[in-house]
Length: 293
Image (cartoon, rainbow, N blue to C red):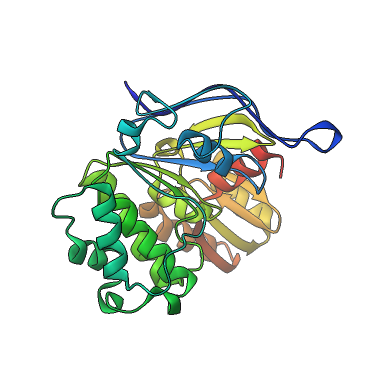
């Protein structure tokens, strides 16, 4: 399978001498085309540096990075890529519609469908407002529209829901899945929102201190039922091998269909259930383990 992004022995050092910082350290990764691929890690792990190198915005100290099977910075590949790296900035005196019109013209896009894209990112009502008054979340939405009007084969999104309220996060989450499932766009996503990643990504790579520590297939991850109840030993007795202790709670590896019977069984045994909710425990625990957080 051809790759959307490939890093081969990639190293990037900023500064020199004793103050040098190695953002990526002999880093290698293959991100296949298709679906949504997550890149996870704490601040300073090297996520944004990887994206900037792939887009040709900065040069590697050593190693190689390729985008859509072409060398970093290749004009032909860049025309097939959309990206939002950190918080986008726009000319403050232009409206959202004028901004996209200008960018589409510079990119040589014919019939860019500006109105429909503003609708898809939730900016239809603000289409003719100057970007000077846009909030951080609105700028993120406009950045997404700017990345997508060229109808790219792949998009790189670095914290695309930064500054958005919960409803905005839900809208962008749905858009990301729609891009992958309906439009066939490969989405490479970096986010600190683990719930967001759990819901939209097919696979994830974990980065720590400039190195790749693991890759996991989220289709194999199973949500767990977090039960806060006393006594814990009685809960574990009912669950058997499908229950594990996590702090004050018990994590139950059960299906949603089994949940009503489980709750009734706990109540019949006189167990006081304070809380029972679904959590994406697998990804959270994997993140903490693979990043050393």
